[in-house]
Length: 234
Image 1 (cartoon, one colour):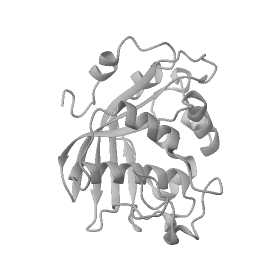
Image 2 (cartoon, one colour):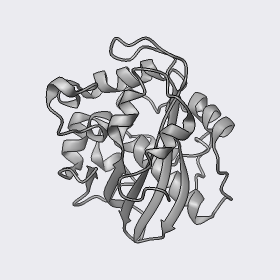
Image 3 (cartoon, one colour):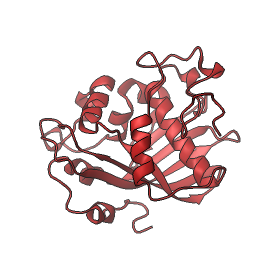
Image 4 (cartoon, helix red, strand yellow):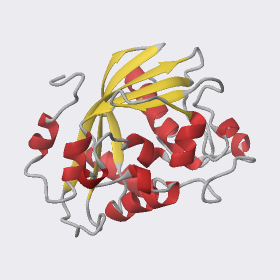
């Protein structure tokens, strides 16, 4: 999935060029990742060689997230398998592509079984746009992601990832504390022979991540210690 697009993003495919001339973008044009790419380059802990399995998985992850959030029509999402795609978080009910697109990536990713009164962020009350606005406001420099390890290659790609940003804006009435908010998790992408995602399974500690918006995290190590409910300590 190497990018050959003129003027394309360094870490994502299928954003520019002839193949995207008819793409319907959620906000009318391709997103600009320059700011979050800068954060990624400054603070990533791994720099994978071009063409390595890790670099390919990281590009697939970033491209998949971009397409699922910003491309409105399923036919335009080239990193996603055309039939039978599902995505799930922490073992909850898998969502079809139509269901995921209808509620938005942030709301799908933050799905919970907690009673409404205990929810710091309630995805059931958010729309696609309000969910995106909430996190763009909290993270003005974006929410960077990197692949830390790849445990297995295609067709069942299992990998550990890190997501992070700086709370430099308010979150649901909570003032910004300016510190890094991050979490670690594991994902399994089931892919076809063209490396298109047929099924995505995410596992991470949702509660600790959202609690980080209420007060500044004590240390990065404390955030890391929460690990992943499936592969803690890896």
